[in-house]
Image (cartoon, rainbow, N blue to C red; front, side, top):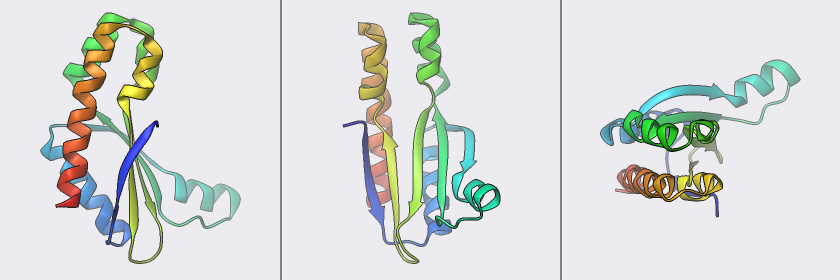
Length: 129
């Protein structure tokens, strides 16, 4: 599977704040934030609800991936999707770096992927606590 996650009994905006806090507590920086819900609303006139993609990055791990295989930067950063289920519940989906970085097919990158997954799992667990 390429994703793992958690469902929060929190409204979307509250869940976004909680996810950002959990990622920060694990020393992950946010390098991108894409408001897919807003883009769809603006460009297509459709309301899909809250849907946000965060690009989470641990610079030291990213450097190791790029040093091992420069083109593997196309597999970065680790995306985290926050999506409203209803007014009171929000799903948080973490990209599984082990699945995605396996495309690079190198032991060095596999090791980094395992470290990245452990960090993201800790962030998920913070949200579940």
